[in-house]
Length: 144
Image 1 (cartoon, rainbow, N blue to C red):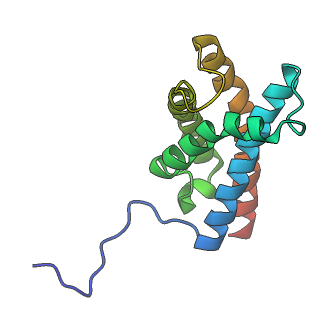
Image 2: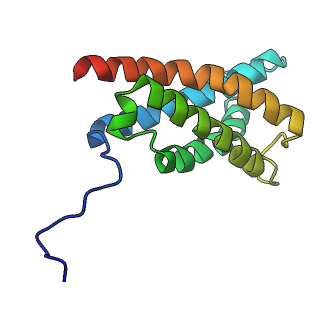
């Protein structure tokens, strides 16, 4: 029988809740900025079409919100390790590209998700998300 006063160890300790909430919000901004940059590079100024920009970003923000916590992007051991950050964020972004592309391919969002879009999204999106999360990991290591 399990002692009711004993709590099992979590799989990975999550950093303090307010920090994780702020980081998740900042991650959503970074993902949205990446997709806004993509729109801009295709001749659409995202600030002139904010609803369209958000509808373009939402599938990937949703996917990040699902995948990143599952893969441990908000665990303390990931946040304090550059190597673990590279591995977790890299894997997470690839999964986010596929899941977000699937969501975007639905009739609820604009743009579709052809394979060439997913390849560009995977490579360039990682170029946005990974440096941001490496900066976070560097900051978390200094705070230890």
